[in-house]
Length: 186
Image (tube, rainbow, N blue to C red; front, top):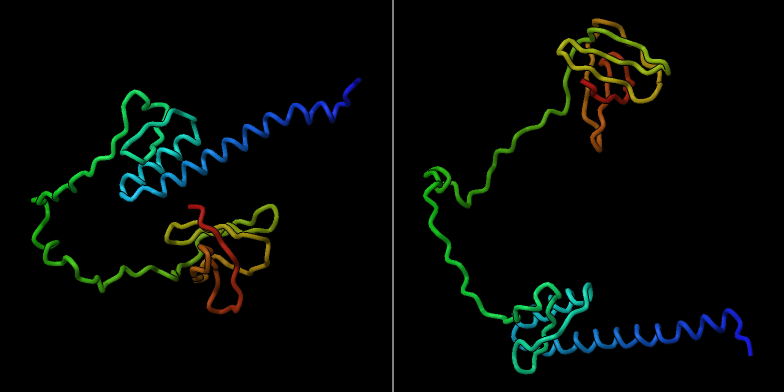
């Protein structure tokens, strides 16, 4: 009797399915065992070791009577024992200045102000291939127009650049009601 290709694959996949079901059942059992541990530190160690085992399967060991802990492959030689460690006492720091101790806990009321708008005169203008402008200001900044919108601008005119939303900037003139989106290039 000849088996068809699909039937042959089904017979090959059956053992793989059984193994994966058994592995997931063992992980669920180990999770239940970790959840049953009363001590918080031991329970956390159990969960950590179980997570390490799911990445690399390894040998299991006992940390306390009734608590199963799974050790990672790299530390199979050293037994895992959960010890309650004494919290480290903070050492006094001599590097603090008296002014910083006096200001400890105070809410800083002064916040550095950011500049939202600058004004400058146009030093030079270059027109790009697609109609975009490159504008050099008298303060040394160079700004490039994003897009090809028409904007009349002459050398010597006073312009402003203001901050927009999401890090954008707009260039405009006081005498006009229009702005163009610009990006600083230098």
